[in-house]
Length: 209
Image (cartoon, rainbow, N blue to C red; front, side):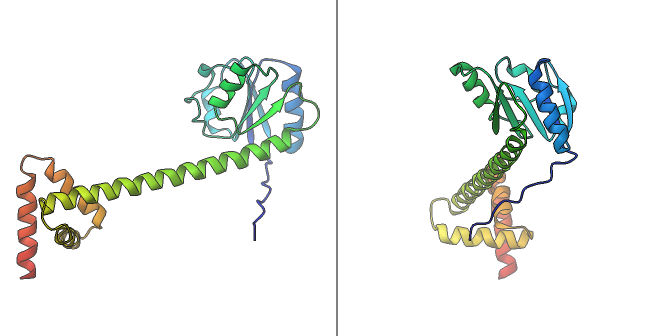
């Protein structure tokens, strides 16, 4: 059964509106205040305290990269683009900042609440996906490290025996296999690395004898 996302309570959240003084800002501020958000207007750039904001609305028509205290696409909160011009260059720029929702200008008496919810959900989904990708990359990197460690231990002979040796070393060092593999790879990068591995392996085999 599909689980319906719970509508969050936005009361007390803080939203920055990065837009030149304009009736659009007043319309957004009225709606945000009615929802219960604290609003901060700013132009031409975001103040450092915006890093702690829950939402940022930004002008896609006159905006530029230097307005933001982060790199394009790396905002630490949901972004809502305020779009008046549909010039391809302006749309492309807004997309480069990975806006999670948009509002078309002129802004009337509605639309802000739905934009907030859509932006929050889109941002959380993107953050979750980024976390999964990072975890997968870490797993791939760990497997590659294990392969390198096994190769260093086997010296081109029996990989199964080398992997068993890696597990045995991990147990003797009281660490997991991934950490043991990283240690062995680090050893092989040293001039005396192979000697160290041989000593560790010899000690481990003598304990088992």
